[in-house]
Image 1 (cartoon, helix red, strand yellow):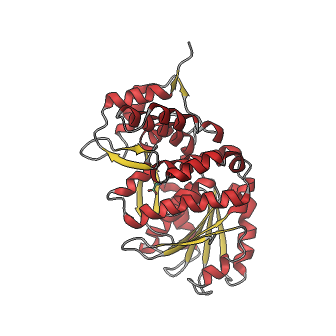
Image 2 (cartoon, rainbow, N blue to C red; image 1 turned 90 degrees about the vertical axis):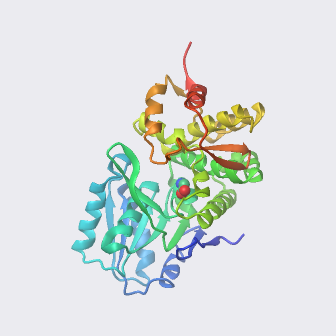
Image 3 (tube, rainbow, N blue to C red; image 1 turned 30 degrees about the horizontal axis):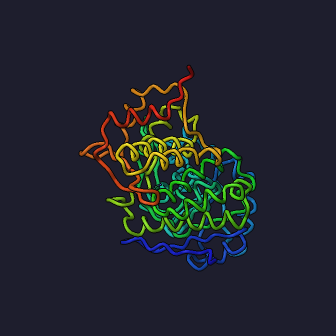
Length: 365
Ligand code: GLY
C-alpha cells in the first residue's frame, strides 16, 4: 500500500499526508517545501514532548539549524485564547517571520491550537501537523479546522487553515494510553458508518488485531479512515455542506463533552452521540432494529461507552441547542440512511432527541 496521499481541497493548496513508522523522512519531506533557512517552532503538549520532542528535533537538525520547542500544558480547559497568546509571545520573542514554520506535535488540542496560531500570527504562517494520538491521525490533523474554546462554547473561535504537510508516525501509538486509543476508534468507526460499509465490516472483523495495535492492520485502518476524510475535505473544504457529514455523532457528542465537564473524552462522547444518532436513524426507518443494535454494541469491543448514568436530559438539550453547528433552520443532525451512508438532516425534533438520549441513559432500577 502506498502510504502517502495528497489532499487537493478546492480553493486551497494541496498537501500530503504521509503515514510512516518513524520520523526518518520527515526532514526530507519538509525540505521539499521549506528551505533550510526557515526557523521551525515545534509546539507540543509537555507530556508528548517528553517522549518525542528530542527525537523530532534531532530529525529536523539534519537540515534546519533553528529549531525550538515550545512546551505547553494542554487540556480542554486550556484550549483557550490565553494559550494562543502564550504562543504569540513566544513567536514574537524569537522573531519568527512570515516564512517560518510551526510544527504541531501532539493530539487534537495541540493541532487545533497550533493551527489557529499559524492562521493568525502575522496574518498567517505555514504549519505542519505531526499527530500523536489515533484521533488526531485519523481526523483532526487533516482538513484544516483550527480553533479554541471560548467561554462555554467548544471550538467557537477558529479558522480554516490547511496544513502544508501531515506526517503520521504510527510507532508513537505504542505509548498511547488505552483510553485515548479507544477514543480515536470512535472517529474510525464513524468514518466507516458514514461512508464505507465494507470498511465498517472490516473493522468489526479486525477488532482483535486493532486492539492489539497490529502495525499492518493499524496502518491500513488509518489510511482508509484518512481516505474518507480526504473525500469530504476535497469536496467541501469549508464545510458549506457535505463535510458536515463528518460530524456524525458530534451533535449529541459535543453536548455530552460539556455536560460531563470533559471528564469523558471527545471520542467517548462521539461514541455515545453516534448511538443516539443511529437510534434516530432507526426511528426514521432508515436503519433496521438489528442494524441499530449492531452499531450500538460494536462500540463496546473497542473500549467505548454506550451509556451514561442518570443523564439530565434538559441540560444536555440546552448544551446541544447552543452548539455553533446549528443553523437558522434548527439543529443539524447527521443520520445514517444505511450503514456506509451518512446524510444531513434538519428535521430531527426535540422529542426524537430526548428519546435518543433516553437510549444512552443508564438508570439503575
Ligand atoms: N472533524 C470533522 C471535520 O474535520 O470536518
